[in-house]
Length: 153
Image (cartoon, rainbow, N blue to C red; front, side, top):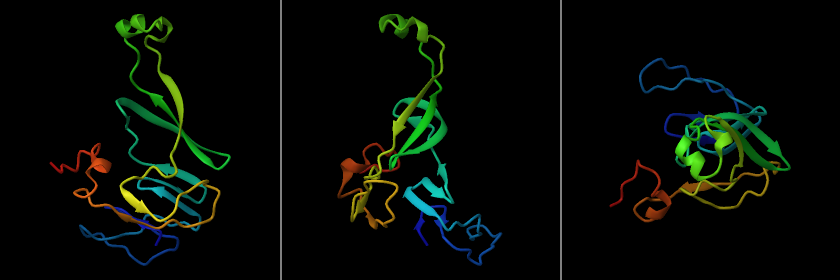
């Protein structure tokens, strides 16, 4: 086992489970080459998978591509909201009205701040494991302030 989340377990070999019952487990896929960066962001057999990138801050975005370069990871996305007439005039960007914009952003290798990590990753080319444990939201409330699932007040 490499990692687990609320609704999945990441494994490097085939396991004999095939339940059709509610709450049971079944094997979707397994891989020998697994790089699990954070929940919802992992590489299986050389192909990056990304789950849940519908918003980036206040921007609605659509994932286009994941890029590996010089030991770093980047994702390319399309901003789905176009610039409106008023904001384009104010910011002197008339040519941007109605244009969908592509951007590329670096993915923080150590961005999962809701866990306590024993080491820091410096490159996705490193072949090392990094163990972690979860943080308690009542003890570390500032690390959870952007997550609407946690209300510690």
